[in-house]
Image (cartoon, rainbow, N blue to C red; front, side, top):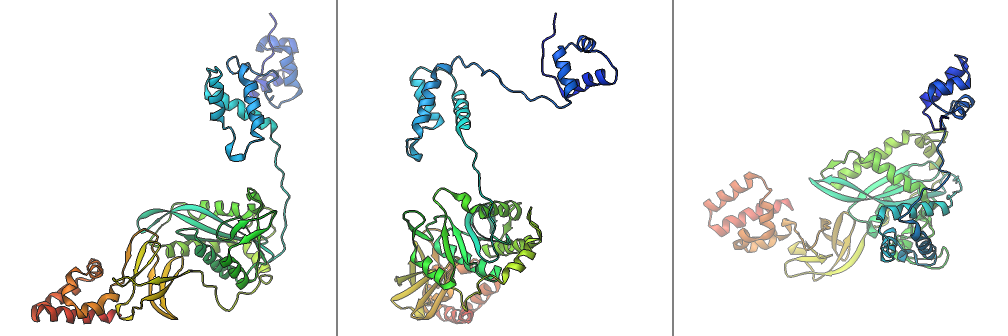
Length: 440
């Protein structure tokens, strides 16, 4: 009986080669002793490298076979359909089930993947090179952090200088326009200058409407911001994120290297201090293919950046607001308190990424941490002390004071009890409120 040719392991191949070259055995003897075909021995003698398996004849698919023309036709039709309304693998499976197919969905998906790979051309990109100070790229990404004991999804603003690869990351609660602009301002300070041109996706914070070609109708606030810092904006072709692949890679790099393990911090301020320190340490890294470290390249790039303007652009949303009967103004469903003795019926609110300011003309009346919840009361209890001095009977039920009492020192309660015991109730509370007003 003649042994059949078969694929053999690298270990078996080594045995055959040793028998021929070192033990000087003949092909016939080796084939007989090792129970392999002489052709297998010849291949082993010719090369020590293992063979790669190539399917010369396609595997039979008796169940799917009759339905392959249906699948091919649907895939061809896909090319003429809108991108978001094309046949998915699951939909194609359901279509051929209606025609009588009784096989598995995974078999259908496997065939679809095979067909797509066979017709897909590899994408080739141009290698790019940038001059110092000319270009930067901006993108957003998401990550997770534990802030004040609560696990939150945070939004990562990322700017990357294209020449030096210097990286800036900052975390925000949202991707609102004021956060987008604030991220730029902090990045410019970190880079100690402004790049000549910045490349973006077509994000809403900058682009109001996409017109033909590369023409964009930009948001007015973004145009004013760009005018303040005198950089040019450049927008990617829709769906072509690789045009700013450097910053997309940088977002993933920062997430993997700066936010693993998941940071546990008390506030966004602490998280951003951590990210800033990580960005500074990243200056010591040398990017593959670059002759110097990021920090050294940035030193060469810094002088080519535009200088910072004399003052920062105010990165806020400005709204006219009206005072409610409870001494508050409303913004995005949340209510912020105003000092009772400085209240005016018509005020202006400025919402920055992390704080809210309330003004009357040019006078700042109140500043609060910005709330991103819904239907919340954000009180400063000091704002209501002038009212309580006039109406001490409302002290026990005043909502801002009840919240304050949950955290104030025990000595305050002891002082309050002593004043109430020594004086009439109203006078004792009034005296205590006067002491609290020292907080103002």
